[in-house]
Every structure is written in structure tokens, then in C-alpha cells.
Length: 273
Image (cartoon, rainbow, N blue to C red):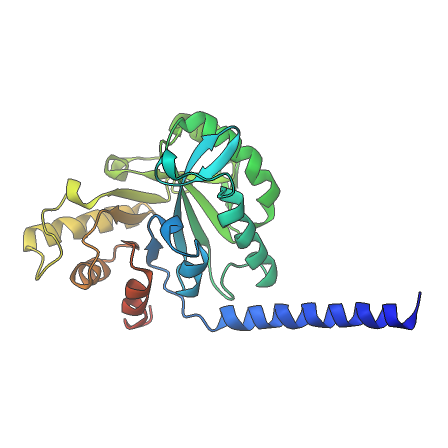
């Protein structure tokens, strides 16, 4: 081999090392907002990446099973063959975890990927189980009732095959509960999150002060979830600062938003927790 070949190899390695260092520096400069949840994240111009740039630690992707592939979209007519769960979410998360020494954000904790199954929960879950085998090293898992935390936790929402998932002794996913599950005696590693529609429980639409009776109800829900070791989230919230402040003050764990920049700035301006 020629000296020119060795020099070329060294140059490639130097450029690669420089890019890894630059990527680590870029991500290290992000202020994390662990209570922010990117609802329907795939609608943003850079799915996942826009949320990561804002310091989000939780994102949501809707999936359909189409010809054996997990395609991302809210409606079937939005689906595109290249927009797979792997390409938009799992692969970039895996690369981030490798770059950042075992975490999605440098020095950050567990990251949540909420996978909302739109149709046929059991078949979609079985395909997802096979897909997740390639990402095992980054995924929080449960084996024989024991939780092993890693960089990314997958939580299934939507058409959840609850009985199928609960029956597995080893699994790489958890389940998104609903309000009736606040009274459940199921372990927190099976139902780590409780989610429900804001409008199912509250009439306040996020302007001015929340009525005291509704504020008290919200506080009770938060306390009940936390006693069981679960987090709480609402979808269809009034996506504006008055509502964000109310949910923040009440201790709601994940604040749902389609406004990444707005909620990101709002939470960064709050006192560090």
C-alpha cells in the first residue's frame, strides 16, 4: 500500500473524529426540558430532530402496519414508503445514543418514544417486537418483572394490545394508561404513563385562571398518578402559555404541544427543577 493511501485513511479518521466531536458539542449546548412532549412530532419539518434541538425528552409517532412495514403518519393517505419508524426515529435515536455515550441527550436521562398504534394493535405490536430487536442496546426493558433502564423507553399508545403485552415476561415496551388505570394495581413498569384527553375531564380552555374546582381535580389526578409511580399527560390541551403554566404548576409530568419552540422557551424560562 502506498504512503498516499495511509495519508488518505488518516485524513478520513480525523474528519470523522472531528464531526463526532462537533455533534457532541452541539447536543451538549441544548438545555433539556424533560416535561415537554412533542405531540404528532412527525408533522414538523425535521421529525425528532426539531424536538431534540429544543431539548425535548419525549416525542410521539403514530404508526400504521402496511405490508409488513411500520409507516409513520396520522392518516393512511399521509403515509409514504420512506417514512418508516426506523428511518425517522429509531435509527437517529440509536446514532445519538452511540455518539453521546449511552444517552439521547448528553448527560440526560431516559428518553420517551410514544408509539401510537393506529390500527390492529396485536399485529402491529408483533412487527414492532421484531423491529426492536435491532435496537436492544438502547431500549429500556423488563425481564421477569425487573426493570432495566437504558437510553430510550418505548411506550405504546392508541390501539394497545394490553393483554398481549402484559402477558410477556420479557418485553421492550410499556403501555400508555388511561384515567381508569389510575386505580390499577398493575406495576409502574407496565403502565409508567397515564394519558387522556383534557376535554374528557375539564371545561377550562386555557384563558385566564382555571376554576378552583377544576384545579383541585387536576391536583388530585397528579397526586394519584405519582403515588403509583406513574407520570401524567393530557392530549388536546389548550396549547397556550396560560395552560402550560397551569399544568406546570400542578406538576403534570408531560406537557403536550405542537408548538415546540414556544413550549421549549416557556420551560427554559422556568426555574430549574
